[in-house]
Length: 145
Image 1 (cartoon, one colour):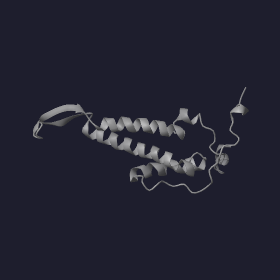
Image 2 (cartoon, rainbow, N blue to C red):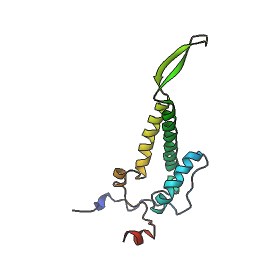
Image 3 (tube, one colour):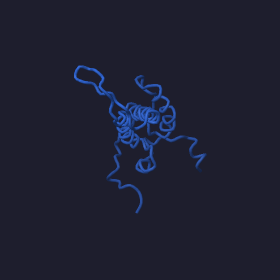
Image 4 (cartoon, helix red, strand yellow):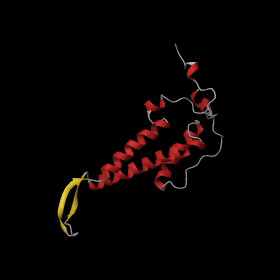
C-alpha cells in the first residue's frame, strides 16, 4: 500500500494568504544573514509563509546565537579561569570552570533542533514534511524533470 490515509488528511486546513514574507525587525544582522540564505527557497516551496515568520525568525536567531557561541568557545576554550571574590568583593583568586558559553551553545543547539525540524531543515525532518501549502516553484519541474 502507498499514500496517506484519507481519514488522516485535513481537507479543511487553512492556507495562509500569498503575501511577501520578510524577516522581523527584531532579528540581529547575524540572524538576518541566516534568514537570507534559507528563506527564499522555503518560501518558493510553500514551507515558509506569513504565518510562519516568527517561528522561522526564532530558528534563525538560535542559529546565529549558536554560531556566536561556537566562535567564542573556539577562541576561549571550554575551560576558563573565572575570578573568585570574597564577601566584600575583593578578588581572592581564580578557579577553573567550564566556559559559560557552553550553556549558550547547548541551549541554542536544543532550540535550533526543535525549530529547524518544523521547517524540514535536516534530511530526516524533511522526509516527514509534505509540500507545504501546495505552492511550488514553477521552474522546479524544468530542473527535475
